[in-house]
Image (cartoon, rainbow, N blue to C red; front, side):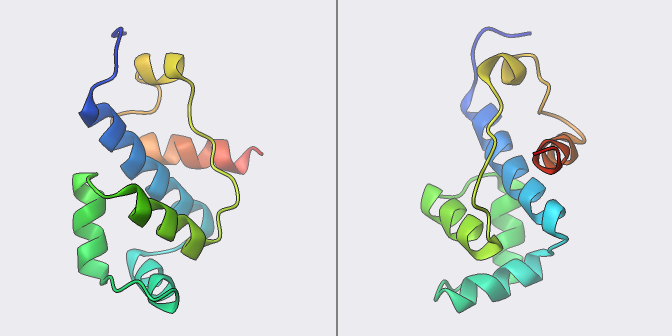
Amino acid sequence: MTDSLRDTDIEALARNLLRAQLMVRGWSYARLAEALQELGVEETEASIKNKVSRGRFTFVFFLQSMIAIGSEELRVPRLEALLDGEFSGAGAAQRLARRTDER
């Protein structure tokens, strides 16, 4: 356990929250690109893959994606869980998706 979060921790969390929402709905990056285009946001499957794999995207893009996906709620883990590494590393998106399903 560490006592603080780094920018890379937050980037990983953003990436995994977006992936989790896609998983819950069974969406691909291609489907997200189509839904974003319906909102007037020009993204391709490849550009989304690149953004998500880096974990570096704007909050505007994140919100556009949540709107396109149809997410009305988002459960962000508490600081303690993040510091414990509960939602980082391999399988983090799946763990976040399970939390979404539990609602």
